[in-house]
Length: 124
Image (cartoon, rainbow, N blue to C red; front, side, top):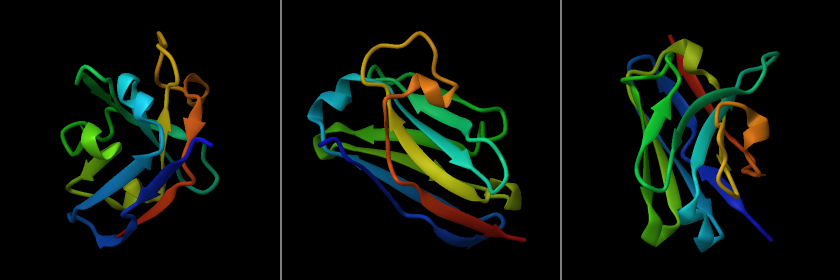
């Protein structure tokens, strides 16, 4: 059974940092792109960023320069380092895997497997 488990969420003041982790059960996922999404109450799930197996990354404009995705393939883990957090970053954060090569990456439907999410709350 495929598992993606996020951790690292919590409450932080504006301007602070958090690092989210996403541990996955399938070593083969190291060959595919892994992304992060977030969803605030009453809003649609939105793209945060993606990291491909080759190391390339893309980020949403709203987080560019503040968030960084990294991977530790030896640990089957992907990280989302979040700096300079703002209250508008408050949301549930989800990691996801493209189980095969995809031409697109910015929509939830472009991903095959999802974690259960971890909550990030940024106070002003």
